[in-house]
Amino acid sequence: MEFRDFVDCYRARLKPGQRYGGRTAMRLWGLPHPERWTSTEPLEIMVPADAAPVRTAGVKARRLAAERAETRILTGVPVVDPVAALFGCATELTVDQAVIVIDALISTASNYPDLGPGRPMSNLPEVEDRLRSWGRFPGCATIRAALLQARERVESPKETETRLLILASGLPEPVVQFDVRDGGRFIARVDLAYPHLRIAIEYEGDGHRVDKEQWRTDIRRQRDLEDRGWIVIRLTEGDLADGGLAFLTRVRRVIALRSQ
Image 1: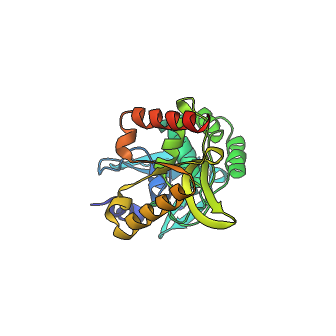
Image 2 (image 1 turned 135 degrees about the vertical axis):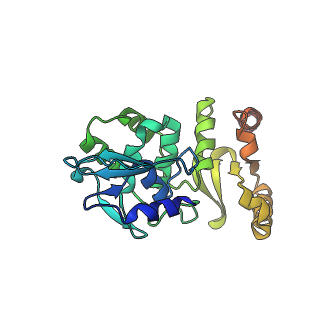
Image 3 (image 1 turned 90 degrees about the horizontal axis):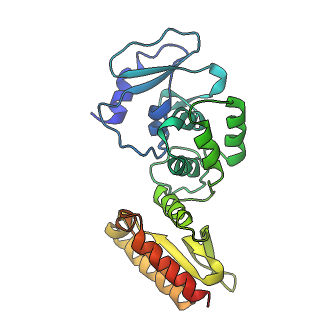
């Protein structure tokens, strides 16, 4: 059985006021939780603050006051809103992981992988307001720290991971989703960029490798950028596996070269 099968199986047992929340809600919204789903993962059900706890195998019940989250109907099931879903998982996330989720929440990109309906799902002022209204809760410090590093227009979790890796190494923060233009004519939008140095950083997921048309487009984009004096640094998941040492060395070297 798949994740959605478990959700649908329990739907008929939901009582009034109950809704999916926490990790289950994050998965329903398509938000990037760091752990892969397995069939042993319990469904998380939010029950009203004055309700009796649910005692059912495979279900994790948590009390949540009605006013703390909006109830949305998503593909036929009641689920807490995306911001409440994030807050419900705050204790499971590192600051970097929370940044990845917030970047997804505020992304306007239609091509963000697996993300649920609506772009953006939220925005930074709304997340900040909700954080203030919730007050103190487990993991609130993680969310507060993550908000300082969240950026709009991100198009994938790996793009955020790459940016955070660059920052953690002490390198300057690159611009997210920078539009390269030549005399006003659009040339390319690059994942991360140092525009004043004409350095582009592109994360290549597997889709870039197996999709023939995407592969051809990538080659053409790189050629167009290089023709205009840009250096294009491409990386894959393998470049991040060892902490990105070789990748960061190259970025540092190219910045030093262009800064001369």
